[in-house]
Amino acid sequence: MCGIVGYIGKNEAEPILLDGLRRLEYRGYDSAGISVINGKKIETVKAVGKIAELEEKLSKKDVKGNIGIAHTRWATHGKPCEKNSHPHSDCKGDIFLVHNGIIENYQELKDDLKKLGHKFKSETDSEVVAHLIEDLMKKYDFKTAVAKTLKMLKGTYGFAIVSKSEPEKLIIARNGSPLLLGIGKDEYVVASDASAIIRHTKRVVYLEDGEMAVLEKDGYEISSMHEKIIKNREESEIDWSIEEAEKQGFDHFMIKEIFEQPQAVTDAVRGRINVSDGNAKLGGLRDVSKELREIERIIIVSCGTSYYAGLVGEYMIEEYAGIPVEVEYASEFRYRKPIIDSKTAVIAISQSGETADTLAAIREAKNKGALTLGIVNAVGSTIARETDAGVYNHAGPEIGVASTKAFTSQLSILVLFALFLGRQRNMSLVTGQRIAKELEKLPKLIEEVLKQNDDIKKIMKKYSKYRDFLYLGRKYNMPIAYEGALKIKEISYVHAEGYPSGEMKHGPIALIDENFPVVVLAPKDSVYEKTISGIEEVKARGGKILAIGTKGDKNIAKISDDVIYVPKTLEMLSPIVNVVPLQLLSYYAGTLKGIDVDKPRNLAKSVTVE
Image 1 (cartoon, rainbow, N blue to C red):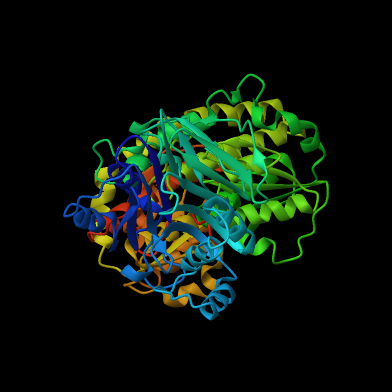
Image 2 (image 1 turned 45 degrees about the vertical axis):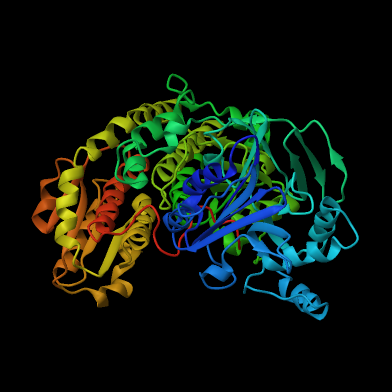
């Protein structure tokens, strides 16, 4: 949630900050703001709405200076309006800061500050921090006042802070919210996400929780919350290019990322399949290979689309590795009393590697002695660093808020997990070889589906008038029904429910009529006949059927109003192919209504608050 950008260096800050905000807009777009220091003057401009509104205001001003901070907001405390927009300042307008996260004890701190005479201008929790620093700067310098303020806060934060009293410094701090320091030539760029840094440098340092850094034009210093200096922090390198974060001629990032899926799946499995051995080579699991042989139970924790990937993974691992698997909403995991021991592995799935609930679940699992593993797209992210081992997606940046290519790459890696764990146990060589061969074919099968793009758009035009949808799937494709319903909800704001097709008659069938179309995943698999029975039940009640069927299945066309055909693959791999037409349907459901599908209302890409 929320995007933070900071700059200090030899160049004008305003265009760099604004470009960074554009690249982070998927993290929040309720409002935006910028503060730039010029000498001992700080110029601040804010606007409600998307970054374009802030650009319009800035075009009428001459904002100069080489140090600045900026923010794009996803509202938590206080409605979207200019007074609640960041940057926030203290009483005198001497200290300005931007914040990503939630300060849980802000009300208590605010009450104390009010008693000391502080006046507040916003409804946010963030403003409290500026006033705390102001109060402490009566006794201490800027750095010390910030350090002591951080010790008073409960909750999560990523901060970038500037002060008129020490105008050559930019202070950043992190606890639970991602923050990267990009190291350029005589300049530093700070951001919540690498996409705002990559244009300027690929060299980055990841701040750890409980750390702050003081940046000046000629260097930086990292210290812990206890003010202990941390030396020799290792630099990392961003492993993708600025071109990958551009639209490259597509109308939206979402459609670009849908069409990138053949490559994303290729990159997810490249160098990781050994067809002759019928096995997966997962270097990220090498150090825990022995522990994995002893694992008796797996828990997958994730949120949103990643949770549905986990549900597919449950089927794969149980069927082919023979290990019991549970899939938990990460947001609920630590509020139960999960039964975990040293024979349990907990797998976290997160595109960003920063999802607050998933990170909290991993920390709880580690505390209870579990082996923790990650399936993460963002190299160097917190989950990637804090898990015992894991596998990177290598899908490249995913900018569209609704996940597409990250999802199919997650599923591909879960296939590798099932193959790896299965071959450690009782999976035969022949079975392993068959899975490995079919997995290598998947990119071309996805390309076949994408060639139907225009036809799928035409089909969606027929269904765009409807406000309710039911998505049905069974076995491996039950989670894909959930994902399809989630996508169309996110992107076109219609009501949709994903349901196991066998459960439809236990309630949802009451909703079926001619105005409630049903999207049915009906591949030729082990539950095909059961799925056909479900379609007949819908047809008997006047419902419209849009089926996702296997190429060559003429029977499905006879009982459906519309069919999108997909190529046949192994049952365990079918979700990776079958989800693609559902993504395209959702994309066109949104764009046909004129919705900006890259930035659907009320959503943000990386959910870093609980």
